[in-house]
Image 1 (cartoon, rainbow, N blue to C red):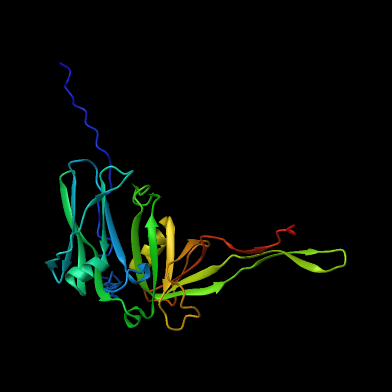
Image 2: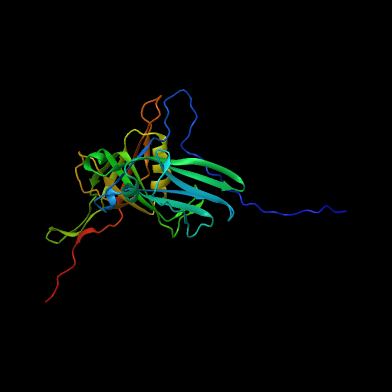
Length: 292
């Protein structure tokens, strides 16, 4: 008699993992420390208020995920919500508005925990550890920040962010600035050998540079914020910056990030990346003689 067989199809999926835990090799530990997040109790300015997002890709409708925000090990009163992606079935995300957290639970040390169940397998890990402070000039000094909106397909995580527009910020010790106008110049030589302006255009570029940092920060910059950004905004809070006007300036990545691994036998590296204005509208040009 022929053997009866049943057919079942299982979609392959990469199980979520804790990307910040690492084995001890007898050297300086370089895992994720507490990320500084700032929020203002008196201002709604976007560059004074950080946000943090987390996401997980599930396999089917029976899979589960829950996001939990704790303060000093205890659940917060902040109403953390789990949201669906527009174009990605079974993937979930959450976004923490630290300004609301500040008003409800106050400053302090927080952890965002992820508990998941996929195909009957369960797990949990800490997505991020955060140190929430009130935004002041003093608390923001020596930091820079990227504010990013994700609205593209992320091939690394196989999640389609299209239409969802997930917002996330990353604040780090470093510097953003060193504007270069990169002026495009187009002049016209007349028959009398006189030069006159046709077009002048500033194609501004800016430098993003971290302090020596561990791979947890560097990877978030290279493999997420600078790789997958759909909209990117830069802010700088350093006292020695030439300009104090870098407050959520809209930019786009123009050159590949570069990583300097510094001296041998140490684990930290410095990331540098050149970005430019998203809107190229600093122009002066000849429009001809107007009559009348």
